[in-house]
Image (cartoon, rainbow, N blue to C red; front, side, top):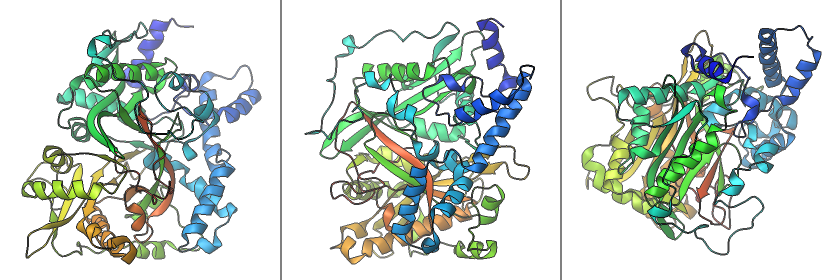
Length: 551
């Protein structure tokens, strides 16, 4: 057996960074949900003692492929949940839905987990629910706790001098590194780490492809701290093998407003997940945030840890049907033909609402005001001033004078307003962002171009009885319908959204399909009653508990 130093050198050698999946260190990470243990045990018992390591790896990949096709890892509870949702929502083909064809659909959709849910099916397994020793030490609501009597912090804030001053110790082969995301070289390092290792299930077909421009847009929000972009490097050659980020967010949860950190992009090199680096990354970024006097945070995950404040579900709208079928992102239902599926998903070639145009700098004051008023309708929202609104909607708009009218070079966010031609009042705005995925080992298509719904608002919400009369529903269908048209013209393949905000008013009508990816929202060091996401909570309609878009 090679010594530990040699193993580290092999792991971080550039030749290891490929799309070939290796399971050698999967089992050691609490953060990695492994659904293939039983399949591997069966496979191992049938192999002979003389089998080579290479052959075992091949068999492991073959077993995973078989498992993906047979649906053995799809829990019956998920089948029942999806069937119940399909029946409740009605729509085309719902009367033919049964457990058998729902399971078949889920088997086809397994490969979309990463693109839509960032997690395994349902996001729940025994390890997630019951064995999180790390989270049991953290100031978060624990599993089984009832709703709090009142909202508030779990642990009080500390003065800076009482916060740990030294970084947490790492295993001897590694060292901490503060990442300067403004440096193109370091931004590319983070891009490469996430692009190759942000996926944690071994049989993934898609892998998120965060561009350096996207990361600079997401991580350089107004008031950001470079110290909150924490990396782990190998001492010997300085290769980046771990990362986590935090950015400041003024968060309002029901009637309470407080500064928090938005935590994102926790990623460890897939060969190092037995090294317990993920908890250390979480603890270190928490320490850095505490040093700035902030003791609350918001984060999301596809898996369940203690304890979600809300759960939302991904839904997707096909744009490039032929390509989506080709890469097995979507499939043609039994009662449908490909030609009819293409026809049903066709869109107009230009936006339909009068006065719709791309957002510009002069719109920022009105958009800021409309955003603030509209977001009061939801229980948990980011509070943003004009500078933050400008960053969210304009700073990622790409390089002017490049590309075409629908997509500029380097563009990561699209933002449009609706302007009244007489009063010049901004009555609505909508936005979406680009997060493509690599299509692994596909002979024809290398990238899946995915658009994700961002923030939007309409002053129709403020008209009398807008919900009861259906006027807001109708307006949002037109507004987000135009977002689909823009995304289609910008050559996106699919448009994704969550069951949050007012999305429930248009998802079905605009032909979004219910996905099998779930996204759980979490608050660190803050207690509040559950917020309405994919289901109602305490009389609050679906989605209206969540107004935070986590990119």
